[in-house]
Image 1 (cartoon, rainbow, N blue to C red):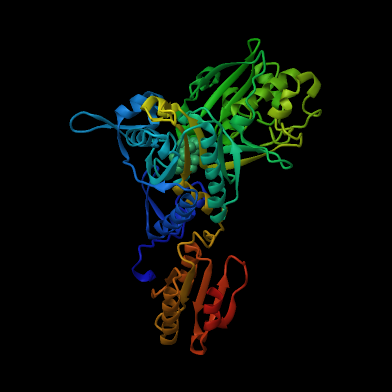
Image 2: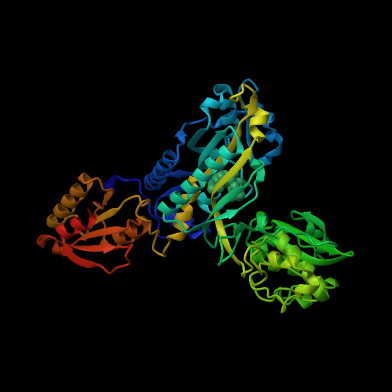
Length: 564
Ligand code: ATP
Ligand code: MG
Ligand code: MG
Ligand code: MG
């Protein structure tokens, strides 16, 4: 491609609204543009990355025996009523009426459509197993679209479905997918972990795994063991509730009113913090024997801290100094924590605080990660359960668990008969008896994956795409396009590489070298050939960003040879 006439609007500054570095770099590199909250256009560069991701996914799906199809995004609400999800799914489901007043939804996922399709077309064991997938746009009216493509309201998903005659068939389909997912994410260069998880709104009877891209900005917490294979989503890993501790209230965000002596309103708080109201996710107060033992706030750390101070009516108290919290609440022990960690852990810690007369954390972000048995609580007095719940020990091998953050890029479920039952997907078995098909479903957030890779391969100057995903493999930059020797050699290299089937970008713009190089960093092609003054001797500068090597002056033919 030639840069001159490409829609490639790079930006020098990071747009203020973009919190995540991947989001900033995708905007600055001219990959994507926002149309509305959580709704994006993919510009030519972004589209190229998506296509490359899709190619990897398609190859691995086909290799696992899944056939591609394409289902409608607009789906009759009747189907969703049949499955029971029309009401269950809640406000994330986008609903609309057609001109005749018939109800429709914009598909957030496709279990209903595929199950009714297969129910109508397949009725014998001889056609099973059936394994299908699509790559398609999904719609979810997320409460808090954020981080660019990571949490969109319109996004691209690969969703696959399997239909088997029995559970052992499902086991096989599921294993095919688990293995395919490992290959897909590895080919994308992603650092990831497969973790045990909860089924969520999809429901179903069997096991489920989430594939987590490891990244600090991830919204999920992963608990994993450094010594054995154990890894789980925090929600799955650690839900235990101790007797005698009850959750008094869970509100969004009225709780301030109860605990705000100086009655700041939520809006005032937001103005103060420069945050949107959604930052206040949850306030929870845990009670033991009618005494508040824990004030738990989920949100950003700073928000927490401020909100807690405010809730306790003391502007100067340090969150870390939990004895003061205790004094101020009049509760036997106060406990508050920063974000990102989920409620059950806090609940356990609150219980620990009560049982042990200690107050848990005393440093930012140290609440769970570095809690020490013996120092922070007495394992005998408080019972073994907390070894697992406070991140102390692996339930399998006993080693210390590690907490990290992850972005859910894929999810595989054993559904069982939930949808085949409600939507009538049956088959006749060998004995001529009718049975329900046993289903599995398997998702990958394609557009989310693009951002997750960007998040892992970021640098200050731009994204350093892994070769298989990079929009261009080679970027050829003539320093001065007006110089005939430079323009000529650049053109020759461009054509040669293009004919060899490479994805090449030629910077044929009449721009200052500094501008070209900055843009090249933002575009992020792994190999760069700079054609400068030495062009007359057929010499070029070579830069391999993957190897992190220095620029090298080499012969143009040597550059071509290195690429082939
Ligand atoms: P999350 O927990 O992040 O809300 P989910 O569990 O609701 O995701 P699934 O229903 O499992 O998502 O959908 C399959 C995949 O689709 C997810 O693993 C994720 O990669 C992707 N995905 C889900 N929601 C979004 C979104 N709002 N934007 C982009 N990708 C998404
Ligand atoms: Mg979701
Ligand atoms: Mg999830
Ligand atoms: Mg999921």
